[in-house]
Image (cartoon, rainbow, N blue to C red):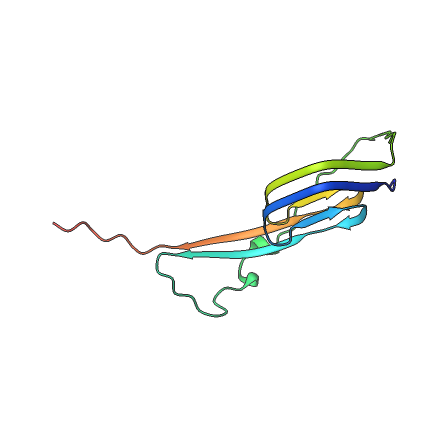
Length: 127
């Protein structure tokens, strides 16, 4: 990895989610990880320790990886050793999102979300 200087004049982020990474400069590894159980109920009644990650397979399934069976040859020429950015305005960075101004050796982000909705049963219309 070629080391370069990263220069940012102004950056503004309005909103960012959990495990969001905002990095200015070089990094060897960026690995944000997020596991979420999101529960929505019509009647807001919640109990402590009601849901456990171990009860949902989505949090333990292996993530399939793309296997490249071809040689990739890449030549990079950096005519300047500085990454220069004048201004960045970001409205939102989502869960396990990455904004990186610089060089990175490895970036691996993972976000697993289980959405649960508990709705009240519909009542028949009154006559």
